Length: 246
Length: 77
Image 1 (cartoon, chains in turn orange, yellow):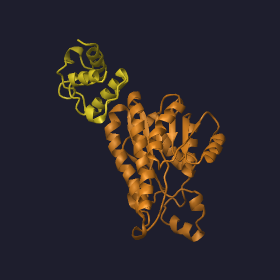
Image 2 (cartoon, chains in turn orange, green):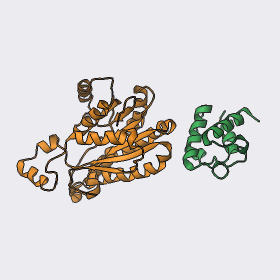
Image 3 (tube, helix red, strand yellow):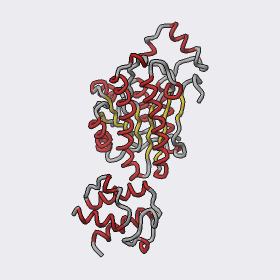
Image 4 (cartoon, one colour):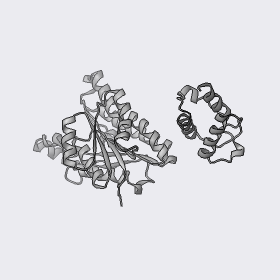
C-alpha cells in the first residue's frame, strides 16, 4: 500500500524541517522529486543526503513570475509529468494586530497563500490532461483555531483550507484530489529553542504528551498522495497529538 | 466542410464522448453536448494544442458553439 513508484512530485520548502521530512517520506515510497526552496546550498546538501535521482529547483516564492514558472520547470526536470504537488513552504511574521505592518501581512499572504494558488493553478493543467493528480498543502492547526500574534499566518493557512475545498470540488471529476495536512506543534529548531517552562506549558495542551515529529507529517502526506486515498478530497488531516479535535 | 471544422469536431467527439452526428456547427457545448464548464476549459486547451494558437480567457468565454470555436481558430490562422 501507499506505493509511489513511478510518480513524480514537486515539494516546496523542501530543505526545511517539515519539508525535508515530507521529501524523505515521498522518496522512500518510490516517488521522484523536484525539491524547491530559496537556498541553493541547503537544497544541494539535502539532495545529496537523500540520494537517488531527485532534482533541485531554486525559487523565491514571493516573486509571482518565478512561481508561475516553477511547475513548468518541475515538469521538465521530472521527465514530462507532475503527479503530486506539495505546497509546504511557509513563513511567519508574527506580531500583534495593532503593531502589524502592511508588509508583515502581505509577505505572509504572498508566500503562504498566493504562491500555493499559483502553483495549484499551474499544476492543474497537466494533472487534468493526465486524469490524475494530488495537490497537498501544508496548513496549520492555527488556520482553524487562530493564535494571538499570528493574524497573518492564521489567515493564510485558513485561506489554503478554503482554497483546497474549492479546488477539490472543481477537479474531482478529473481524478485530482486536493487536501491539506495541518500540523500541530512539530519538533524543529524553533521548538528546540524553547525553555523547559515554555515546553511544559505547550505540552499541557497536547493529550499525546509530546511534540510531533516531521515524520508524522511525512506519513500523512504519503497517504494523501497515494492511489489508495483517491476517494479523499477537500479534507484537512490534523496531525497534532490531539491538541485540537476539529 | 473546412479542414478546421473536421479537426474541431474530432476533438469534441473524443473529448465529450458524444456521437459525431450530434456535433453540428450550431451545437452548443453545454446545452446540446452535455459539457460542463471544466469540459469547456479542457476543450479550449485541446484546441490550443491542436492548432498551435493561444485562446485568451476573454475569447474562450465567448466560445459557446462548435461554430464559435471554428470561426475563432480560422480567424487566427
